[in-house]
Length: 148
Image 1 (tube, rainbow, N blue to C red):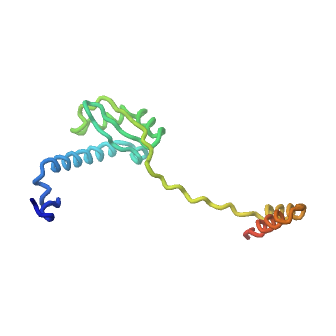
Image 2: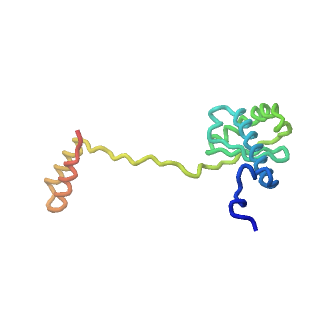
Image 3: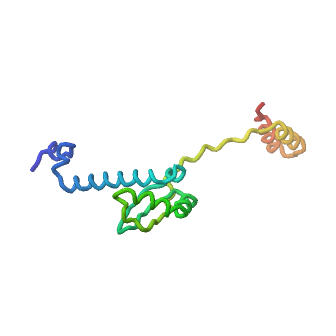
């Protein structure tokens, strides 16, 4: 039985495991292919576009929205022509584009609308016409929230 510190995978032991070495080589190849593909795309289309795979002459890309996907499809002949100059993509004959929206998007914080002086005046006026005491107090409190 191996000791615990001998079981840990480090960069020294990385080269000894053939499966892991093969996975890292595939990841590096994929990364290089993605860089080459994104370099051939126009800058406006490169952001939000990812290289998925290239199998049997069919290259698959993913775009973050349908608009970018349509623009890539529209320019596919131009893109493939530029890609064929690269050795990796010499035999690409078809381009598939899939829409894959981003998983997480930061939602902007909701901005509170500033109460205008006119709206505050209307609230005070309505409070003066209201017979219900509690509703009148609430309307007057809302009217006091006006900012200059």
